[in-house]
Length: 329
Length: 258
Image (cartoon, rainbow over all chains, first blue to last red; front, side):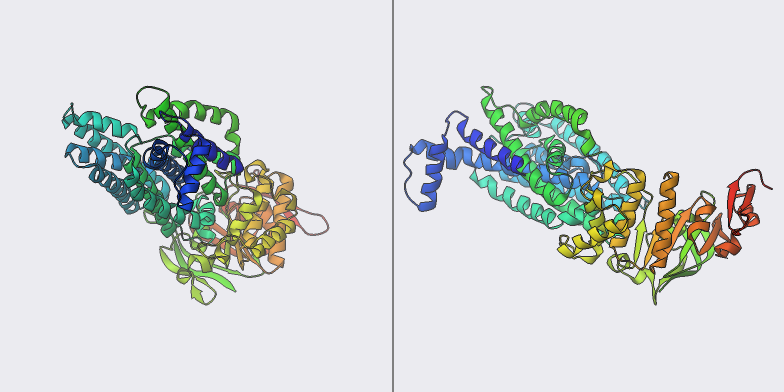
């Protein structure tokens, strides 16, 4: 847990120190202290502006989105008893993606596009869940996952269709940019619709953390232990979908975090969800913040987050598979 | 207390597995369920556990229908020991055993100090207290079976139902598990277990229930029901009886016949 907190703190310090206008630790502390005491800080006004208006919101959003995706991935991996599951397993990301490209296609405003994405994610998972539960089978988990995969593919086709129909000069670049994930346009106003759902969903998952251990056992075993698996599964899926949809709506589609961060957290604190969920949240926040800092500093143009997480995530995951796979298999 | 069913039909929505089954288990006795593969042993077990609904008839637990219990109430009376398996995640042995306390706490609760004390007690009871901090995935099959037994006992149930508790265990561990089953029945639990080895029933069961093709072939006291003719009818294969010269104890060998 100390390592997870350390990662987040280092990422936070780096994020403020790196960029077109580097902010030193001293400046940051005096701005924060001034805000708390209500005095005028002893730093350039530009630094204050960068901290509160530009980099601050982006840093907060990166931490929230990273934490949300990692917590959702942790919850889904436990629920589906499969360490290769990511938060979009039930179609949350593909639903949100279709919602967002539709919003862009109809030339809606930024907030409306985010709302479309958020609702798209929720509706997609609700549809998957409804279909999955309607199929009476001995292994409800497997049916749910398979339904998620096929509905995800259908939604992907929908995204493809909208991109095909879209105006290639104005709309298509916006769609592509959104589908690759970015936090470059994040402002203070984006934080409220992000924070609410993420906090709510994470709190629900935290409250259920001990029951989630039992839920990661085979279905019949969990029921024999006295756990109402049906209602609990709905609660966990709803909470994880809420945080996923909110983060995709803010930052676009960012893969890998929900897949690899839970593994790193598990190697650090073990599989007990009581410690795993907080550790995954800290690590996920630190990880995406680090990646976002890279995204805006390594090249003259912003690199899409989804591309960077894949570039960083793939070799990391292979290393993880070869070196520490014993701890979760 | 009694766990019983009268004229029970078992199966899944698409397939009827067995019919006209009468089963009864009382606290303080061990009942062995024997029969060939595919004969309905596991389905009957899961129906008696309340994990699948009967196709017809009713399972009764104490004074009420089993279906009228909440999953929480049920788990405080009946514990299930599945076949030892490899878990997806490397929980510690203590965490696995603490999961047996799930039905004793609220939905949002964490294991209490009292729950931890129960976990320590049941682990010591099976002589595996030293495994407490070890990952469940890194211990032997025999140890895993004992951990699952400890978890069942942590539920503080009246009845314990075990699905092939000796499958994939070495000879020594089979004996250990048989002894524990006997001890649990002596301690006042009602124990129901399935097995492929009639000798395990001879060792640990007061009564046996012979199930073939979803129908009851025979049921009753172990020493009277478990004879060569019954076993040959049950498995459709020759069986040889070995008698101990003085003590009158017997054992069975598969194959050849007499």
